[in-house]
Image 1 (cartoon, rainbow, N blue to C red):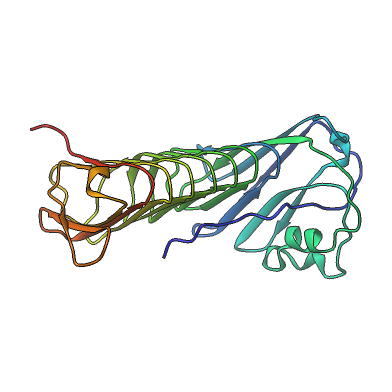
Image 2: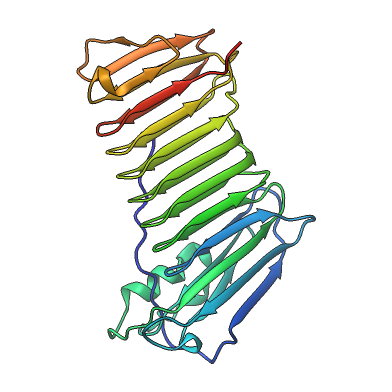
Length: 284
């Protein structure tokens, strides 16, 4: 079930002075999770050439506070690495070193002790090996994921999320006000949800796959292979907002339309109550 993920501001305590650029490399077994979290700044993830994970975080001074007062913390256990930007003004619980399962970034936020302002920008560039689950989360900027071979997730509050050339079991993205763009996606489970942005999807459709795209007030555009078997469940504000090369008929439920292409083995749910919904297939 699609859930819009709302990210909290991840604010931490002052630490030793950092350089302008942070670098971390490491390895995880296939199936493990790499979670990169930002506050102010973008996240860009790309495929690694080998089995080594690489994370580079570059700091840029904003209008308030000093970059050296923002530190990058790494929490690791056998199946997960969590890397996050920690801003000044919090204390830590004594059990902070229990690792990502404890989610020390959230612990820092809950125990914030002052209101020191710091809007230093931290931009991440991440190299992700095949088979690793990647989760990129930020608040003010974009998440861009390209070429990954594994589960991929991207979340932002005010930025766009762009997923390109992804092949894995799950592709998931959410934003509050940003656009979500999926291009050349090959996954049996695809989820995208935004409140006010647009959603675009162009990719393969797998048999018995599940595809759920939602924008409360934005538009949805879907480009589909002609030979794909899909059963559609479409929620729209009116018939005038639907533009489809697949025949969609109204159901007994208000604002709901249904249709089928091919054998209908895959399920696609499209929902928008404030924008157009467009479904296109290539010309013969």
